[in-house]
Image 1: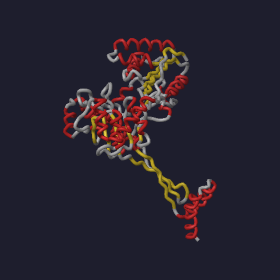
Image 2: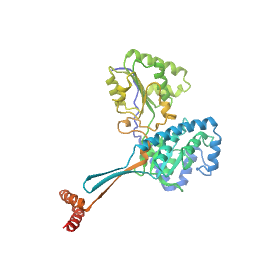
Image 3: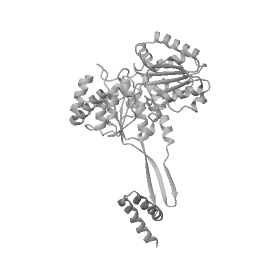
Image 4: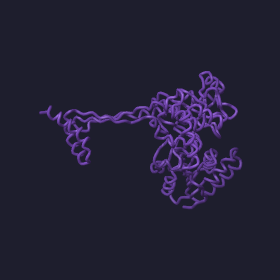
Length: 425
């Protein structure tokens, strides 16, 4: 292994100062309700409308402010997301099996009742995030999706975001940002039903709010700054590698990038190309900070070492710019979403192709995938038995309970053994 450039690996870390600020805010918000929501919105976003919820006429107005091409393109993207979510749902089947005579066990999938979806709007108005949480939730069968997005400074709201939220299927739309938005959704302020699951990305305060609200309700995942990993063998085009790396670097000064190549010479070509493209990139102010601080380029000695390095990094997005795609596809284990071949790029997954862009960061891909239709379903089990089966299982259960000294448990089994035993005689 040869390291041509090294950068930090962003891991979502606990920040005591942020945690304290968010904790105090959530206590205040729960205690003082909509008054506190309004105070924080006025203080943090200079946003104090008569109502944070958009009316049907305001939603129609926002949609009408989007040109035809934007609406058609959004529909194209959302149809792809919806089609993939429906296909995912079709793989989730109920189960029922007789494990022994008279013992029926099963599971079924039940959608949660209410979802709170947050569509970020900080440095960039990422209206494409609307379909990534709203559409899978509605396809799963969620009754109510409350969607919040922060106000645009001096504009009120971004029409493309409202259009995306409405056409994705949001039942109610609020122009409200940050911790106060998550409090409204989680606590069920006003006429809002408390959310069973909160979804969506945001700044460090939003991430911390989700962390602190977890348990009271579910969350999709804790997402930090975006990441891209690229495995680029000598057949890859340095222009494509550099372009795709910088495509993610422009997100945030804290975004992470790692390129693993298979020869030092090729790695140097990629480094040179990244520097060339940075010189002319319109968003280089952000991308260059990100690449300098958190960009890495490593030369592996073999394909297996490249796989090992990338599995350890566990990137949110992973591109395979290699000749033998199947070799890597069949062996890689840790990534949020995989982009195979030059023909596909992370931006396709972010915006239009149909897979979800709410993905694990900070090495969380070691233990979880991203948002999908199953995130909004509870897989619950059930059991039923005949009297004859209850008699057999009851005798074993009673003995097991007594070994554990849980006598009341044992007695529930004894009651059935006694009752069904007498009936059998």
